[in-house]
View (cartoon, rainbow, N blue to C red):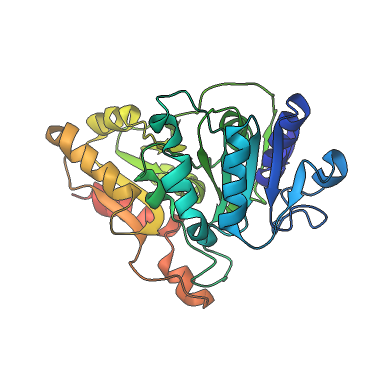
Length: 325
């Protein structure tokens, strides 16, 4: 086993798939010589050439549309959206075209498309370079949305997304890129993974995804030393949502904290909360607690950004509050 970073795992997954399948290619802004805004595709241009690592103009709507056309005619494009904020410029292509093709053609058309959307705050990039817009796409039938939090899952789920025959939004949080884990990366084709229990416990359930799972794991270690046993669930796939393990956990603990780096209103945390109330209400000992961003844009001010983002300290405080009820 070797130490591998989150960004290296994504690059390795793309590289392995491109070696195995000549129909897989990568496109996006500054992904060639520069290697992408965060260096994820560094070295891939030299390895695969400009026909398979394609630099695009600053026109998300245009190159996402091109990728959909390529997917419909046999390609397996991977598209990097440099900042998820600018996926808004390709919403028509994704929501009104890619998401609908499987259905309007009676399941006869395939659109194997991966959209790598780089999101999240924590780098002081301000309100238009720090958003997580996953809830928009989870509201769209026909799109799968995944958000791996670990290095191993980033590698495995990128391969799964590439070989899925329908469009997948692959969320990459900026703060996860440098994080390293000791793991073995094994190429292979499997179905997209659902929710996963990272820690078994009986006092409270914590549900999270993406970078918030990293913070939750740190909080769990603190809480363990304080005598609180946490059942930690990492969603991994946001749409379709794998709710089974969440509901089973809440039945056992009776208390749940949902942690998500998203605005409070109308998001993933609200959907999970609703399903818990609908299906396991009789097992709940305390109201479902959500820890999210406030309903305001992310500030470029480091202090204001830090105040808005949930972190391990906020998770520990929220757990103590819930467990005291």
